[in-house]
Length: 315
Image 1 (tube, one colour):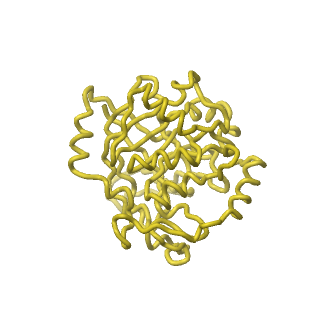
Image 2 (image 1 turned 45 degrees about the horizontal axis):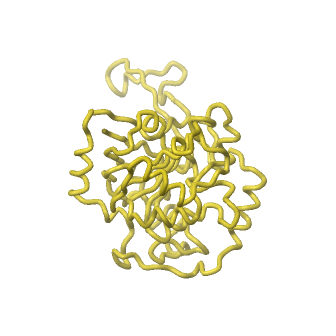
Image 3 (image 1 turned 90 degrees about the horizontal axis):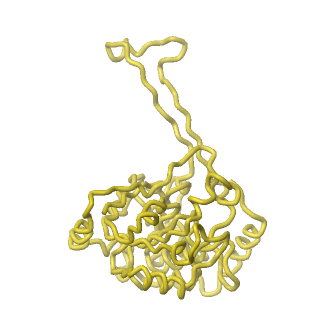
């Protein structure tokens, strides 16, 4: 739960860089559209993705969330296990008719912690969000009235993994290392990766595997990631979602000339493309799985901006 001094400065700078921010682009799916790139999901795409299952292998793409794990401040996770109506030797027997024992749990957390789906209401620019929605019109303290993640349909699609660590010949990219359009093109060509409309793109940097446990403060304060231009490049493939094994997708701190977290604006606000963060891509990279069936059915909490998730890769 830490943030480097440099990143704090960058966040302040970002807040002042709003030239052209009032501009908005209406969704190609109409002025009332609230699900963006999820409109690209189709029965045909689902059937094509199902054909990618050859070995019957499955892998959880969500990392384990632990109370106290680092997160972008002020986010945190706390868990309490309780035994309701059993304190001081009380029994549940009068209520249920037998000598039952039970545990329940209570969670207090930010839904943008750990493996997560960033919804279209998460990040905009100068108060403007996806499909010309102004934050003042839909962001209530009790929940979003538009663009919330409960509206996102199940994302069942072809997934592809771009292994940038392998392409660059390292176990993990360095802190703040930018991933450029040129590097993505080269990695995709070398790994024979094609992307179609409605696919899910994941990027493996090795960052979480290398640092979350051994250097949690470093893990939570900086990340390698895509440049602003690379976000535009990936959006042009018309994916449903773009993600990585990092907590922010774009490089933090950003490369010179870029805006920190502006990849979120490019994908979410400008293109309606969802962002998947802190994905557990290590096994896919180790086993050279570059194409798989991606399945996500997130918890449908009405009004939620983000959601902790555990998508499944199948091949």
